[in-house]
Length: 527
Ligand code: NAP
Image 1 (cartoon, helix red, strand yellow):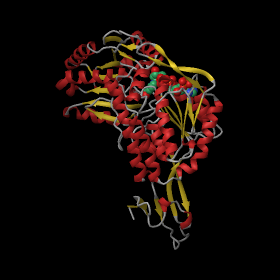
Image 2 (cartoon, rainbow, N blue to C red; image 1 turned 60 degrees about the horizontal axis):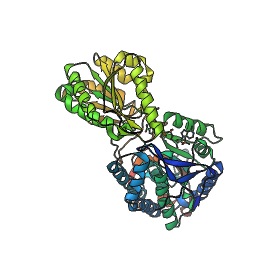
Image 3 (cartoon, protein in one colour; image 1 turned 90 degrees about the horizontal axis):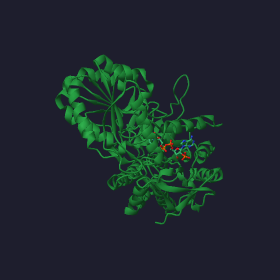
């Protein structure tokens, strides 16, 4: 597939008229000279949004089987791009080939899972409450509920997942599954990869005879395109993964619109890992190795990267430190996604190193090429951590801080101190159960996913997954951006009161023609 540097607006390739952008190879530190990507402006955004608005009703009214087949067609199209896609992504991100192949597999599987979800129809929440004409003192109407799509959705591609959280990633799959047209803002860190995937979606729209506005891909920099997209009246919800500054800026724009809309922003999390005493006594070295492996995975550029370890002082903790130090010393520096992300990491690690009461404990091997991150482990004590809010800020990359506590009370105070997180992890043995129980009661209030005896990196795409959490992990703790429940963000309930048979949506019709599981007068039935 040829990459042209055009935007994809509805069925057309549109050359942006703003100053062009070049893709960048972080491994060499050099721009990729051709093609240049024409950046769009507010008029391009408006055209994409208007086409999306026009596509909304026909798209959401499609038979569920057609919508599911559309998602599957995109999945097969991405798989069919083969090595060309992963090679381009590798050039633009510096991520290793195996990681990108895995991410492609995840992207394809995610689309197929959402296709199954669409067919199954549980998300419709079809609910029927029969009329009670003889009820005294007043009769009750016939009431039927289903969920419908909210409208066109703006998706911001993530820098750290060029496939699984970008053009055809989790947000797009969830929104298309819900019945929402999507306008994607490509992330500047992988423009060519974005165009390749965008063309697959555009071709699927055409091949299935769908309205062209079901999908558009916009390119731009300097926030102008993103701001115009969130402000456009046709857009009814936003999916975003990126910085806290970016996410909160989009939240403000969305809240100030004449019609405010929800922004589902996944922003920053330091994913605390609690190392409980008996677990450390039993297997300090194994925990240290697992922790360091998780810390350096993908150059630490995962939203679930373990940025904090918390433990009570003991000889076993000293063993954890020794093994972590030795393991980290063997970890090579890795190329980060962009020069900006690399600079932000250097600045964040420097800030940690210069914080009074924080000391450098261990580091990985030194950089040997442009934009490489040297992993780092710092140490502080609980009083210092509790007194310095900045130690809770995400340092995006392979840096983590060990917080030493003098006793259980300090460890629980640190847990109580946290803001919202995507994950919280407990390393424990049976004898740690009493403190683990107290921790879980606190951590349930703090994080979207709680893990025992694992490490937080690695997010499965399943029905039970929650990739969310209270602010600042996300803008809305009630939602997940990974897993099939992510569809809920782009749905809203509608109640149909006393509708005649000919006017009822099929999902709510008598006789259950779609053979859905439905809640009928309080009972879950398939009849
Ligand atoms: P970013 O700067 O937030 O940018 C992400 C996207 O949002 C880009 O398309 C950007 O468009 C847009 N955007 C940002 N601020 C905007 C604003 N004020 N108005 C309109 N659009 C805006 O994130 P990034 O480039 O991915 O990485 C920067 C930092 O984000 C990293 O160093 C890291 O700290 C954090 N990050 C966190 C996670 C996580 O999962 N926790 C993931 C990725 C990144 P423009 O190109 O037009 O600015």
